[in-house]
Image 1 (cartoon, rainbow, N blue to C red):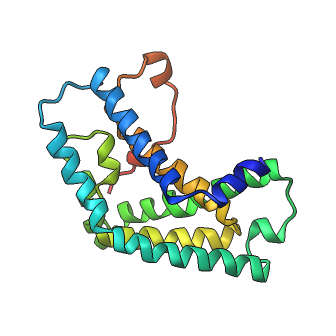
Image 2: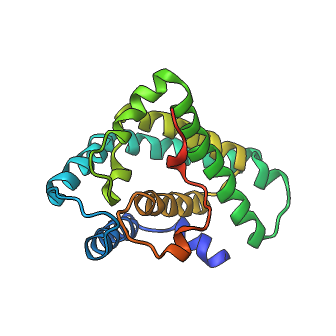
Length: 203
């Protein structure tokens, strides 16, 4: 587990980009081969449109990376956050840190976007995708990215997550954002298992 955290602490931009792009390409391939729904649309054009939303927010993400590093450094210097204040073995601190970051940085902000009317106006772009596929997870208003960045930093402060744990969480989170939207036919025996879905919320 220590080795995994160390890997994500020092992961290069090229390696992380390969993971993120590779995961998206993999899911796009699978949903092309075994789609849940047969949708007649221009997949490349649709995907390009959704990817453009991510490119537009690139500046926000770059600025956000600086703030994330500063939050991690603050926790380290001041021994701040749950993982720093309490002593957990590494095998337990990793899932606890991931759970706290997902609860605050993903679930809580998503719940607020569905509950607070003016926030819903930003999140609405994500839900107006006419063809939901793996690229839909990229379809977010730039303003929504600011919301999510703010709550990600809050999650880091509360959890006390290290840089390696933050990078691990963000990599996993992006992959599952694609997976939960992918148009993939899943066997009924697996699909019937009740799992939490971020998209089950309603405005």
